Image (cartoon, rainbow, N blue to C red; front, side, top):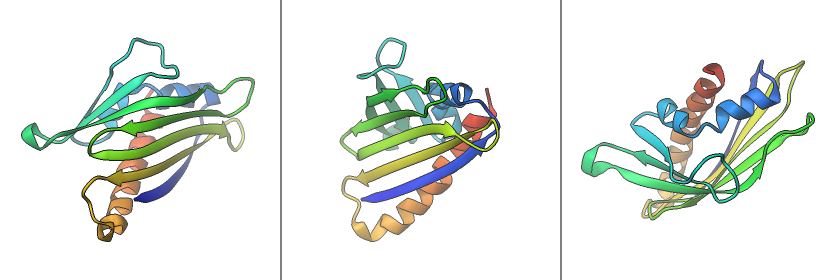
Length: 146
């Protein structure tokens, strides 16, 4: 199991950073070989189900997740969403938090606890490096593109 934390700042108001980070299908545009769909009706709320399908053809797998915490930013207060992974391959959770940053900007924290079923702990250092690279690039892309 790996745990990691990414931190980024963006010259965006809290509400706009939140909107960009929680438009789930856009995550698929930001992560290579991944398509993200929302399996429940909008808007996002507790119980919303999101599925990330990663890979090519028969070498693809689903990463189904459920929103188990949904607290959009309000009145200058931080926002937090937790996605609990409910799949057969990928287990754990991911949290995205937006909080006031420098000036009028936003500080973004992405925390994740991730386990890939069948992957021995020997590969954890490689997995955490790969996650930091892929998700770090994804957060940057999501925040840059409205």
